[in-house]
Length: 335
Image 1: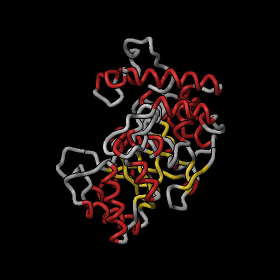
Image 2: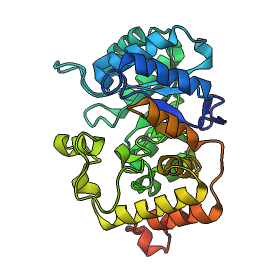
Image 3: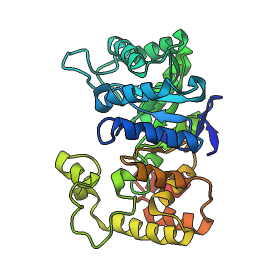
């Protein structure tokens, strides 16, 4: 596996990141250890989790595994923002909640520092200066090495970058957005901000909950029972069937199957390879539930898709030009 710099920093991460959201929830602790071992054997060095994954269980599993690894070889990322309890200060990006949360994450990860500490989404109730000043202090204390954001609008990210520059604070080094063949909205504002300001991009849900894994075909009238998309429909998650069962999705999947066959790869490997080499992308976050899923996902690296096949996927998945870009003649692929 190759390594890439995280934005403008000197920190290098593997071109795939192992997502730990399933650890302790859909994936047993034993299988989680096996997955991390497999990822390490493949040359990976980057694991992403969050305090709310399994209400801390994911961090604990990563921490127990990490104790048997050379700590400096690993880049461990976690997040803060969503509620960990019912109290009025157990949610958000206030100084109080961030400082409480980082100490709890350090305990669960059983480590002295967090390599990448990310705000999970925007907090409209807390002044941005309070959040960024607190994160800057954590970097200065040594408890956090780098900071990042997830699920920000373009204007929110730009505002955070500008304020950090004005105050001389540690800037965000990366953005973690939803980005995949079916969801390319990040290209309108978020990707340009990251490219202009030198932030790395580490997309989450690169296979959109299994839609791009090869398990879904045009002839289906409903998701198979027990699959992630079936669960999404029941729980009102973003990747639910009612959202993606449309002509655009099936056209993208038809092309994905064609390109995968031409490249002699699986659909999942093809979708991940397309994403990891998109402009600005540092490392897609692969979040497997089963060992076999991770085995397949790891086959996304070590090869280069043909220009013709990449162009085919670009074209079929391109999104309609939105205002105000439709006033300038800019297309999605030119942004």
